Image 1: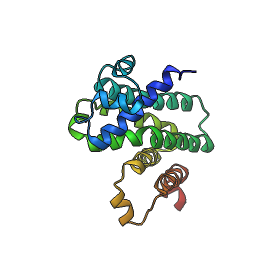
Image 2 (image 1 turned 45 degrees about the vertical axis):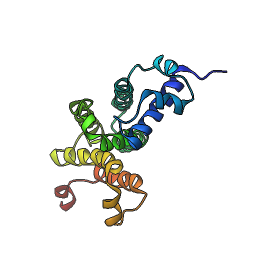
Image 3 (image 1 turned 135 degrees about the vertical axis):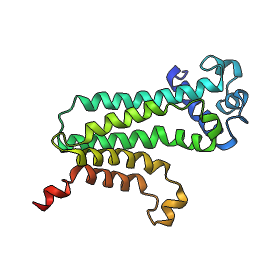
Amino acid sequence: MSRPRNDTRERIQQIALRLFTEKGYDKTSLREIAAQLGVTKAALYYHFTSKEQIVESIMQDSQTAVDELIDWAAALSATPESRIEILRRLLNLVDTRWRPMIRFAQANQAQMRKFRDAEGMVNQIRRISILVRDPSGGPTEAYKALLAVIALFFAVTMPEQLSSEIGIGVDLPEIALDVATELISSRPREAREL
């Protein structure tokens, strides 16, 4: 039985991203990607005709996944539990979809300039931070929500050397989730002092 088209597309994306990260974008050919997949170059062309298409599809799929999370989260009631669940799901997306993409970007900075959609990512971060903040809170709560979302993205981009130097260790995503949860769950200092 043959693999579904989407499964093949995802395998191409995963293998290409791994090769682009290990060997470099410029030094990886479509022929090498096809060989790693165990298919002909013509079979690869059925899904993607260029390396650029592969990278653009990975970026688009990652952004679509975050947009789907935002749509799901927007339909929820703004309870403390739902806001924490949004953070959990965001961490999962960031860890599974964005981490490989960020590693690729770090290894291929010159090539990433033509692929970046910084405005789109900033907009997604802004929208998620609105969904996880306490709707009755003020500017302090809004800032804490933004920091909570950024903490999850930073958890997968923090250089290993930095995390080991400050003693965080390998559980950084879980630690980031704890910090993010605390940020959106705590009341502002003024309210605590009353």
